[in-house]
Amino acid sequence: MAMTLNRNDAWQLLTEFTKSDSLLKHAMGVEAAVRGYARTFGEDEEAWSVVALLHDFDYERWPSLDDHPYRGSEILREKGYPEWVMRAILSHADHTGVPRESRLEKTLFACDELAGFVTAASLVRPSKSILDLEAKSVVKRMKDKAFARAVKREDLRAGAELLGLPLEEHIANVIAFMRERADALGLRGTL
Image (cartoon, rainbow, N blue to C red; front, side, top):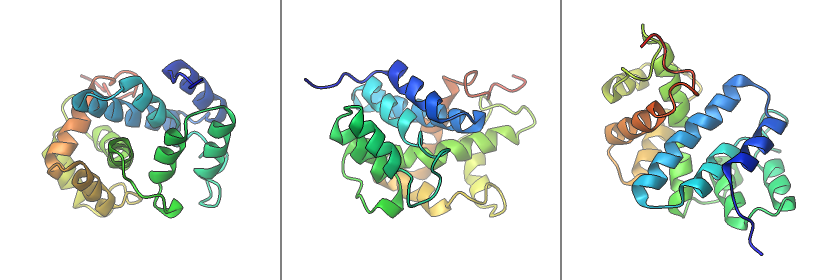
């Protein structure tokens, strides 16, 4: 019998392995973006949410490229998650060599780094809020190499290309999807 994916189980697993508030918020930010695209594409929002929540659940315990996301995939396999879940999670990391083929795999990659970048761009605003963040200001931040230095700009651009969207439109979508969860993400700021 196939396993039923649900967000509560995924959240319990995530919080069992991840204690850092920033990593939990990252997972929720990616989840908000991926769930928004699932809705846009007419896909299973709950299933896509589970994948997004769990994409980095092993990272805090096993941050090395030798372990992440392989350890997490092994744990998910042991728990009976469907193979496509592990494949999507493995595909989000370039070093695994798993090509991004499905719409979910492309969406997870496109939203992963961008959700973090949008969070950083929100937090440096005077309002510290995503509610008044605009796509053009995120594009401007991308040009500042010192800002969120660890984020590869080419990954942000490649993600939009994978979705077949202009970069600014993809950024605007992710901002809109993350706004829906502004409070949970700590991004309401002073607004």
